[in-house]
Image (cartoon, rainbow, N blue to C red):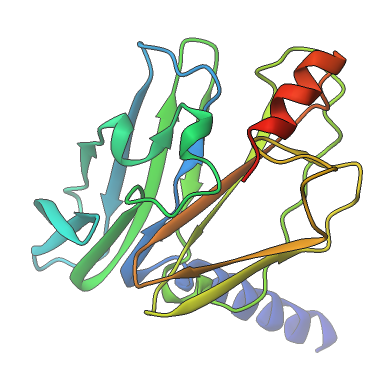
Length: 220
């Protein structure tokens, strides 16, 4: 009896986890690429279990960039311009941006964003409305590689107007691109409107004093 009960509980948790990725709305916050390859490709992949075809609208900067019709057995994908999702310049960081994607369908569907370069590929899976919240944690392993391009990015996308985002709780040893220890604080705030974007990048601490000075002079 206990084994059957455990199985039912496990099945329910698994079903709830899968269902959380199936929704009528999905969001993808942008990210940063220090050295964006010209061979990079990125696309959103959409699928559903609905046998009745229905349209999905894909938005960037509150504007519909395309509409795709999907149904069970007929998944679709759409290539995304890098400029709509990826920032390749430090000038894009710590700045409210128009990058990022919002997807809306008339029936529940699954959505992933897939990004590839010659060396590797990455997949972001949207949780739909289940992924909306007020408190999040971003964790990254220590960046020990001395390559300047090594970094970790976090993107924030607002789902409501007049949303205040506070970034805090990071260690004093964390070095942010465009910010530094001497001109930074233990936290910083931004106000975002619906579908507005903020993203920032953590990188290795500059090894040269001249590089550290340059970073400090270019903080804001």
